[in-house]
Length: 114
Length: 113
Image (cartoon, rainbow over all chains, first blue to last red; front, side):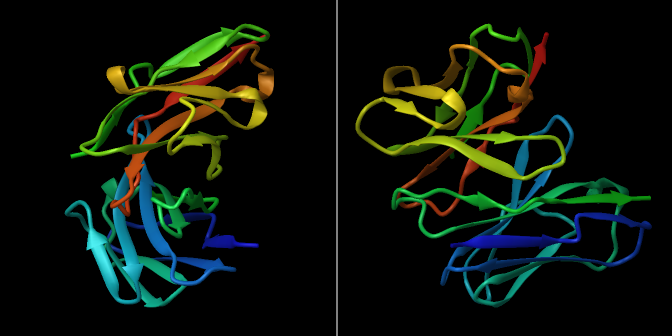
C-alpha cells in the first residue's frame, strides 16, 4: 500500500534561518507531488507541484522553493525564513487526478517562525 | 481559472442534528469534486469524491454529497452528526487535464452536546 511521510511534524525557526521540509512517498511510482500551505482562516494554498523528477511548477511568488531530486521525494526549502512563512505545510501525492483517484496527504508540518 | 467557495466559515450544530456544508465551484471543464476532512493538527482525509455518474455520492462516516451542475454546487450532508464530526471540512475541485486540486477556505464544524 502507498504511504506518505512528512517531517518534521513541528518546527520553530528564527527569522532569517534556512528551511528544509522533506516528503517521501512509498508504494507508487511517478506520483504527482504537491506542497500546500494552510494559514489560519485561509484554507489550503497550493505552493508547488511536480509531475516528474526535476519538474517543478510554482503557483505563487514567495520566499520558498521546491525540489524533486528523486521520483518519490519532494523538498520544500527557503534560504531565509520570514515571519509570514509561518503556517501548516502539507505534502500530498496523486497518481492522476483524472483517473478516478484523489490526492493523499501527509500529516503536515507546523512551522513557526519567531 | 478554477476556484472553490465555501460560504460558511464556521457552523455549530447540536449532536444528532443534521448538517449541510455548502460548496460552490468554478471550473472550465468537467469537474472532479472532493470533500476532505481535517482534524486539528492533522493531514486531510478524503470523505468522498465525484467523477461522473450518479450525482448523489456516498462517502465514509455517513456523509453524502450531491453534485448539481446547474448550480455549480457540491454540498456535503450528514443526517445526524456525532461529536467526533467536529473538524474542518474542505471542498476541492480538479479535472481530467489538471494536475492540481484547488481548495476552498474550509468550514469549521463545532458540535455541541
